[in-house]
Length: 447
Image (tube, rainbow, N blue to C red; front, side):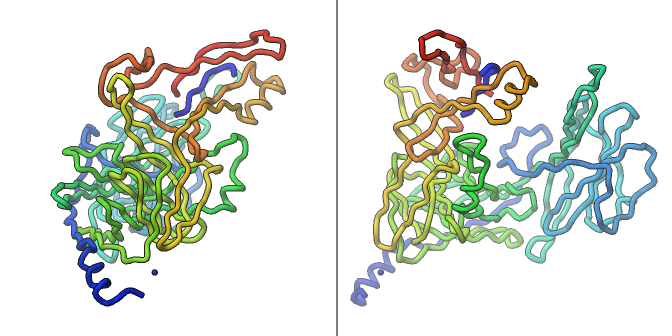
């Protein structure tokens, strides 16, 4: 949560046989390709990428049509390993970009493509209807749906007129693969999302590297670690949603067993294969409903854990708690859901075969308030008349809370925000001198 304000492993043969009998069976999950409806009401795990569209034509063998306008912008997106050119053009000389030309088949010939006009358009953004195409994955052509959105980065000239400085083109994934499977008398629903926006649906979370973490921007004391990966969604609920989403890991811990995940998009199937021993046991710092244990330093052997209570089985290796989600009730019985993510200060630890390691995260939480260095410099140089105070909650493992919502109930055990009845009341602040003089006070805002 970020709020801002202005101002501030030898066993006997029989033992081995019993062990194998106890091992969970492999699970094969048929996958179905699904798309997001044009009104965006169908849940699809969000994914995609954003790139600046520029006036220079990118290197490549492109066949372009004769342009009538004079302000074309270009960018490249890569899908299934094929680079595709996108061209933007305004209908009016002084208007924002509302026309888009896209190399649908990836052959470099845009002269054969038709211009698409934005279905929603203003001076602040353009939004186009989704494109349906096929992309190569694993040597096969597979279906894919995407949508484009363009946003201007504007500045004011000397006369106060808004001038477009840069244009950001967002390529948003509008498709996914879904399936169901049975395990221990439960029906689980899964969905795979293209979080990286490259058409793969199976990209694993990148490993966390201590050296890179130490080189991260120290402009803020706790730099959030955003994991780039495709998306794995799982639940035994009837409907999947954003809160069931985790960055894709190589392993899945579910219902007391660890599985190795294998995704085959051309064959439209996902296989959960029981992971053989030796394994290590991770005791969680607090109960959680979902945990992502990211591999550290060298591999992509991350572990996704769903429906967990207090422990997770993992292959031996180095890990860190990259993200987690917990659900608790307050004194009046209202249910709260909290999510947190790792920062550059979150510890890396080692899980050894046959041993138990305890992670550190969660309660108690403490507030952290900081000011960006660039904000301090602007204030000191007179380029601004104030600074922004940035507020976040930090867990015991130096993780940052990024969401806290009441999901059931209407009690009054915790004061609620006047602007959002699912969130707690915004905290207040007061800045005083050593002599006790109050120099500033106010209330933070969600942002």
